[in-house]
Image (cartoon, rainbow, N blue to C red; front, side, top):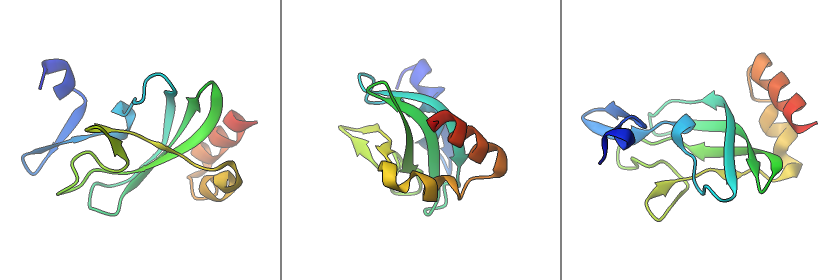
Length: 110
């Protein structure tokens, strides 16, 4: 792993895990704008982000890395990725965010 790549991971129990703010693939379609929620790496944690998919403002999610899943989920070809939340679920997902992240997400999508 290159020095640059090592900066993109956190070390937990002598293993390396990608942090949500460093998940930037697939680069042709996805652009991370802001991580709105960064959950734990205890096996049940998830993260929520505002981003751009093919130049459309979207909300995305992913399961955080944990023991046995160092890339988290989803991942593609060995690279951690985000999944795009269907537009019909945006309101429900945004309602789970803390007040400042909720306001950011609502303004981001409007």
